[in-house]
Amino acid sequence: MQPTAVHFGAGNIGRGFLGQVYYESGMKTIFVDIMQPVVDALRQRGRYEIHIADANPRTVTVEHVSAVHASDTEAVAEALAEAAIASTAVGAGALPRLAPLLAAGVRKRFADPAAPPLNVILAENLMHAAAFLRDETRAYLPPAFYGVLEDKVGFVEASIGRMVPEAQRGADEDVLRVTVEAYCE
Image (tube, rainbow, N blue to C red):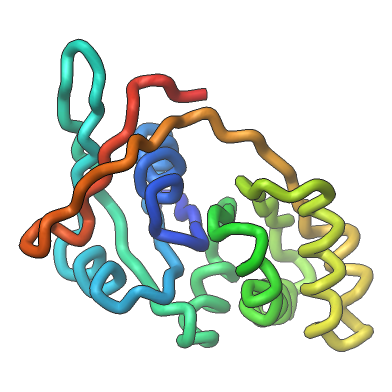
């Protein structure tokens, strides 16, 4: 069975960096997003293209993707219960909105005490994002899950190095189009 990554935020960094990393690592990616047209397109196509802008422009196709709308708490919880890893790239201001979704996933996953740990990579521009999101998530959990949150859920801060140039988007352009520079760390 192909391992699954759950990624919150199907924007430029989500699709243009983390989705590619997961795909190239042999994983399926389930994006969680609030933009219904993006969610629908990812579900329908199961793939998208990344246009790499450099001296030798090229296109990379990322496959084995799907999406869940962030308003579907049960579907997000189910995805997190089965995920090998999770990550975020939503912007610091949106992190508090992830907490109830993560809490639902923690409750579902760790209803089975033998469930494996879950790491959540935070690709956010926020100092101490890990402690912040852990505290926010705890607020949505019953006390019986506090120990599980501390012992079995890792919140890992990451620094992403991928440039996304400003692009002029036409009205008829593909909603999944993402253009990035070749630099990728």
